[in-house]
Length: 209
Image (cartoon, rainbow, N blue to C red):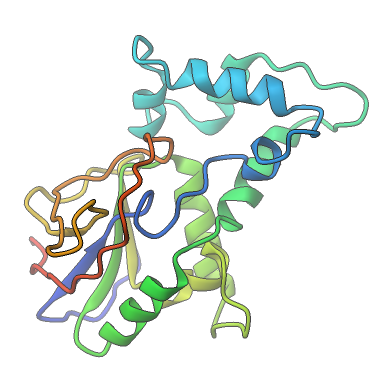
């Protein structure tokens, strides 16, 4: 992991339900006319079924995205090249739409603290995040996606590469508008979505050595 400057405070922010609500393969699953829409929706429902361990194993890094795609068994016709689903998964992770207002808050707070994404998430997400940070050196004029905003984050803690430190405060979504919700862990990228409103909080906690 790349060495980053040490600060007295660190902001750990959750991803799904806080910084973004987009699911995996959003370009396919968000288009009812896409030829793979129905197959992918059915396959993802099976992956995240409560009686299956595939989602947890994927989230913990015990299964790779490629292995999960193989487990789905989706047959591609001549319109799609081999590896299409894997490539599109990475592309769509980078294009996940974000809560730009909250990212603006985090960018302003970088003068006082490090900003770290701490999330229970998959290898594809971590890969897209690191790739975006390695390419971006300044924010574009139009800032709507993970690829646009990853540059303002100092690092990522992702469950597929290792668990977040226990006891660290996270920015999380809450149905309350009067107080922030602080949680030690975050839901996976496909967790059920709530109808709660965004909560902006600057709660921080020093990192563990």
